Length: 409
Image (cartoon, rainbow, N blue to C red; front, side, top):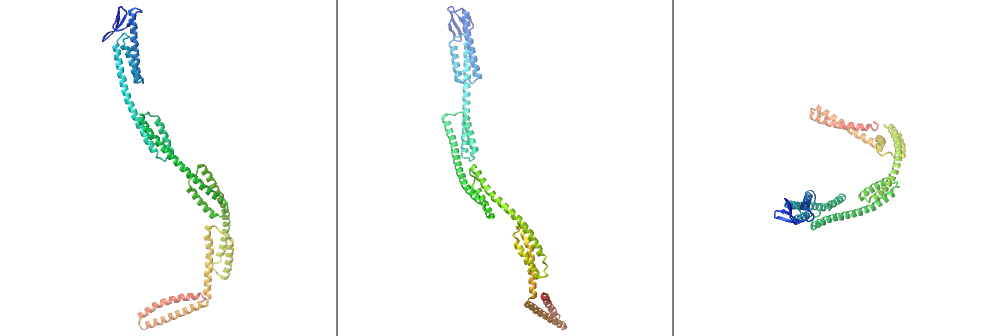
C-alpha cells in the first residue's frame, strides 16, 4: 500500500483521496505500482489547478461573458466533485466558489453598466429626436438637411433600446425627417414655379429691349430702358441657366442702344461746342453797340446779329444762360434807348411836362410872395409853415424840370 498527504492506494489497487468528509474513491489502478497510481492522479489534479488558473485569468483580464464563465466553472466543479484527482480538492472548490462570486459581481457590474448605457442611449436618441423635430420646421434647407443626415449617422452608432422604446423614438425621428423633406420639396417646387414665371416675364422684357435697341428716340427710349430695368429687378430670378442667358441678351440690347446714343451725343456735343464759339463771337459783337449813340444804326446791326444768331443752332445746355444773357443785356439797352427817344420826341408828353412845370413854378412863386408878406407882418409861424410847403413844391418842380430836360430843354 502506498500513500501521500492527499491520497493512498490500497492492496486491491483502489485509489483514494482525502477530503473533509473523509476518504473518497478516486479510481482503480491495475497497470503498475501504487506510486505510479498516485502520480497519475496527482497529475490530473495539477491539470485541474492549471485549468482553474487559466479560467481565473480569463475572468480577470478578458471580456469573457458571465454565461461562458459559469459554464466553464460548472465543468471544472463537476471534475472536482467527481474526485477523479488526488490533491487539495477543497482548495480547488474554494477557488471555484471565489470565481462564482467574481462572475456574479461582474454580471451585476455589467448589468448596471448596460442599464447606464441604455439610459444614456435613450437620452441621446431622445435628444436626436427633439433636434430633428426642431429642424423639421427650419427653412435653412441646406444646413438643416445636412444636419439631419448627420443625425442619422449618429443614431446608427448608438446602442438599440428595447424594441418598443426604440421603435417609438425612431418613428418620431423618421416622421421629423419626412416632414422636413416634404416642406423642402414644396418650397423648391414653389421656387421653381416662381422662377419659371420670372423667366416668362424676363423673356418679354428681353424681347422689348431688343426691339428698342435700334431706336433713335434717345430720351423716350432711355427712359423706357430704365423702366425695363426696374421691372427686371421686380420680376425675381429665373433658373440659373435661363437667368444668365436672358441677362446677357437684355444687357446686350441696352449696350447697342446706349453705344449708338453716345456716338450721336458725342457728335452733337462737338457741333454744339462750335456753335457756342460762334455765338460768343456774336455776343461780343453785340456788346460793342452799347452805349447806344446811333439808335437807328444800332437797331440795324442788332437785327443782323440776331438773324445770324438764330441760324447757328443749339449750344451746350450749361453754357446757354450765360451767352444768351449777354445778348439779352444788349437788347434791354436798345429798348431803354428807344423808350428815351420816344419820350423826347413825343409832342403830347412834352406839352404835359411843360404844363406841369409851369403850374409848379407858379405855385412856388406864389408861396415865396406869401412868405415875404408873412415875414413883413411879423407872422413868423405862418411864414415857417409856408416855407415847409415851399420845400415840397420845389422838390416837385425840380423833378419836373429834370423830366423836361429829356425832351430837349
